[in-house]
Amino acid sequence: MNALRPIDTTTWPRAPHFAHYREAVPCTYAMTVELDATRMVRALRDSDRKTYPTQIWALASVVNRHDEFRMGLTDDGAPGVWGTVHPAFTVFNPERETFASVWTPFDADFGAFHDRAVDLLATYRSATSMLPQSDTPPNVFDISSLPWTSFTGFSLQIKNGWEHLLPIFTLGRYTEKGGRIMQPLSIQVHHAAADGFHTSRLLEELQSLLDEPDWISG
Image (cartoon, rainbow, N blue to C red):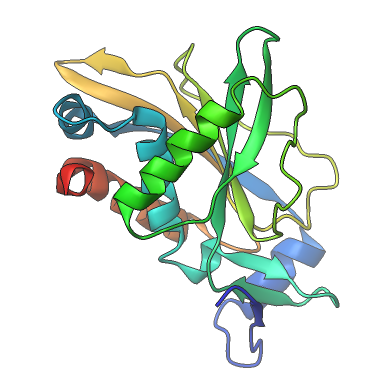
């Protein structure tokens, strides 16, 4: 189901929190963490899978487990939940030093998703427009990659961004610490949609995926 399902705010435990952070004190927050990607990187080295599509699938997989990270607004501004959200992600054009943002449907089958994402990245690597696809649906969330640098903090300053309830992710360059391969990741969240508890749980689940990467070769 890809329709936006309205939330019954008369029974929703977070109804007052949603109203507070959307109307009284509109705000977003950003959290930057270092994930241990050691086992995922090793699994990728032993397979023919590509890193970026693998990272995208892992993020989309945990995002789609939770209502609070699939939220949108109905036409009258009420909160709702998408049945599924799909990743939109950047692809870099090295000749122009610009990027395009493209999307592909989420698929719980990692192999199928990976192959489509690989094809998409190859197709749009030389794109000259920022949004080369004409069929981008409203239920997409954004992923960006900065493979040239690592970071310990990252946030987006979005003017008039109070209507954007879906999370935004930014991946950084791996670093090695104490024999472990660390992955910097920033997540930007609308406080009306999710609290720190929800974001922490999402990140814990993502770490678990990276720690048990049998799905990469499966």
